[in-house]
Image (tube, rainbow, N blue to C red; front, top):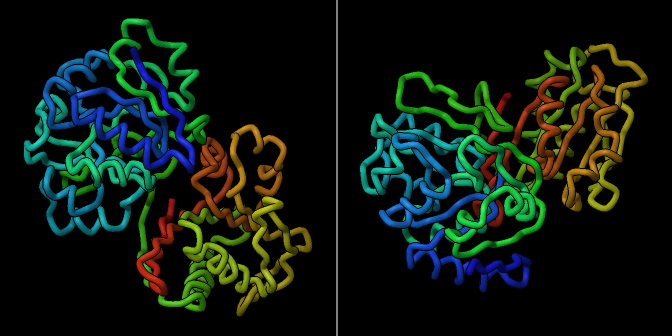
Length: 365
């Protein structure tokens, strides 16, 4: 009989231990990820992989990607040249699946007919912890049947599968309703030009990587970012999406961006979701502004359900000349699509590398 356990901040250690045990015995686990609920099995276990394929109704030759703990782990399972490594270091961890030549160290059933394998290093601590502790790759495919939509809640998932399918599941980890993020963006890195095989919430034209060693340097990078975007300012609304752990420096980055408009005393809006400021000046610029131009600082940390966006009115701010900075932007879900349609969007990921060191990756959509 399928067991279901609830994931909470208090149960993380117990959940990880139970999942590891089930995976080690060739079991099938439903587990949350940074995008949707996924199907996890040991990617080196033939019977476990066949069980997964039976559940998915997956046709032969259709590849299934795998989760690994970090970039070094990727190198154990796929061949990576210098150019590919540079791309991976910019985008991982993140909501991407990277397709590369397989080293054939996972079950062949997971590879494409071309001998390639999709690898994922998600920006989701539980998956990274699980992959690191397991020491082997874990399948990274969405919890749905072939051809059907992915699921963001266990209730939705269980209502759409038969009893025969339910009997194949050994463990379900219920983390409640996940943010409605799209499945990962799939990038084929096997050719000289990067090809997007599937678009998720985030696709990039180019990326820049910066190093910060202090809060002031993070502010300076934010100011320089806005300066680099000044040619676009006023043509469309501008949305800068910030992603990073607590204390990574998202608010410092916002202060730097706001300083370009000579806006001071930026206060974190964690408990009120957002503050707005009137744009009255632009630093070192003769650009003509209007009294109606607004700088909006958004913090989605306390947002739990996508329905909460219906009452925030963020879409109303998507007007030319307005600038919106969104902390915890990974919670935007389907609003990414609206932002991409109506605004110029820049995605900034801030990674903690030490007490004073940060890697800041600026991705232009």
